[in-house]
Each structure stands twice: as structure tokens, then as C-alpha cells.
Image (cartoon, rainbow, N blue to C red; front, side, top):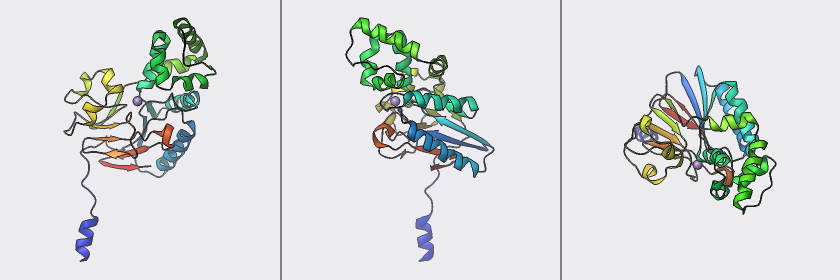
Amino acid sequence: MLSKLLRKAAPTPPLPFAVEDGTRIYAVGDIHGRADLLAEMIDRIRVDMDRCSAHRLVTVFLGDYVDRGPDSRLVVDMLLALSQGGNAICLKGNHEAILVRFLREPILWENWVALGGLQTLLSYGLRVPARLSREDQVRVAEEFRQALPAEHLYFLESLPLTHVSGNVAFVHAGLRPTVPLDRQQEEDLLWIRQPFLDHRDPFSHFVVHGHTPVESPEVHANRINIDTGAFATGRLSCIALQGNSHTFL
Ligand SMILES: [Mn+2]
């Protein structure tokens, strides 16, 4: 009887991934201007770091720092400070991509507004109506460029698309199935949904990603999604990977 119970309680088989030896990697999902949730999560990660055994600690932010929520500017400030501290890697999300593109292509105004860009502008001190003439779009792009601290622009422009440790790839949205990581297109890494989400076979790497909000983190045989829609739900998710085990903070 007891042995039967013990067998039942046995842990599920490990997922087919292993991060680099001796490394503990924290991955944080889509923040979208929720500096309050980011601050809490940074504290939780620090507590976990203090009591873990790994000799190398890395935090990977999966992109979508800006738009929708109220504090995009502050979130960028916090991430800048962390990445300058040396053990945080901030990946690019589609929202960072369109923000930077808007500066050069003001005609993308409506696309950016549809993604919550007005809230980002507000956090940088620009109150702008959603509907603008072409002329005003150009003017707002110029005003935004002036309001953006140079280090913010540089940070947003130079975010990497992926981070790899062992056989795990960290990326904002996902991978185009059957295409190797080094041949992936930026468009897919930042925006992909169905072809990636529906894929049941292994990818070139085990994938940890965000971009598509889910109620709670989703663990699949080939990927883990940790975008829990922080902006709307108040839940920001973080997963810690070490060896071939994972835990949610
Ligand atoms: Mn996204």
C-alpha cells in the first residue's frame, strides 16, 4: 500500500532540457510597464539567489518591457541598471521593436497606438491623442526622440533577440518550427504565434518564451510559456532553471 502511494507521488519525468552546468537562470515574462511587479520580482529573485548553490547566476528578461502599463520609463530604468550590473540579459520584444521603428517611420503611429504606445509616451511626459494627422505623427516622433534619454534609446535599439544556455533557447515569441536557431528571422522571434504554439515536436532547442498571454505558466514537452499577462492580471511570472530542473518563483 505504502509503496503504491510512493509510486504515485513520484515526480513527473524531467523535461528534455539542461542549462549550462553550474548555472541557475531566471527568466522573467512580459512586464509591459508594470514597474511595481518588476520590483517585487527582482526582490524574489535576489532572495532565491542568496540561498541557491549555483556559482553562476543569470537573469533573462524575455522582452515587452514597454506599452500598455503605466511605468514603461521606470521599467527601462530598472532594467538598464540591472543589465549594467552585469548578470541580467534583456531580450527584445515586439513592443521594443515597434517603438524604435516608430521613431524612424512615424507612419507606424496607428500600429504602435494599437499596442499601447500612448501609455509609453505618457510615461516619458508626452500626452498625445490617439488620432493624429501625418504631420503630427512626424512631430510626435521627433518629440519622443527628444524625450527619450540617449541611454534608453541605445538600450532599446541594441537588445539581443535570443539567449542560449545548454540546449535551452530564451526568446520573446518563439521559433519558426524546423528552422535552426541561427537561421531564424527576427520577425518570427518577436511576433510568431500559431505555427510555433501548435508545434508538438521538438524544436532545435527547448524554448522558454513569452508574448502570448496564458492564465498560468504553461509547461510543454518542447517549450515553456511564462507570459501571464502582467499588465491585465497583475501576475508577472519567473521561472528558475538549473540543470534539468525548473521551479517557478
Ligand atoms: Mn509580445
